[in-house]
Image (cartoon, rainbow, N blue to C red; front, side):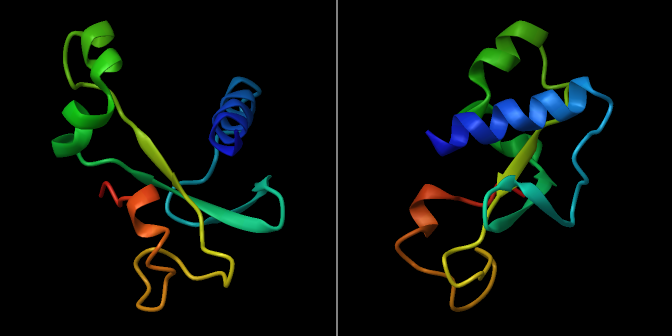
Length: 93
């Protein structure tokens, strides 16, 4: 699954002291497409980070969302982004 590979690669980079840039395009994680990592708003933690909330016993941790463009290189916040992809990639900012 693509998502698992993205997470594993981002984790590997962080372990090697090369964290992914936040808020700007990054090439090298998804072949042929850039990605952007953006901070997740705490209001979304309960719906997406249940285990992390249990583990940390609070919401005092940072989370990033990896966002990718559609096949026409449009981002989810752009007007002509493929509407069929929106449910698979809700923006958590």
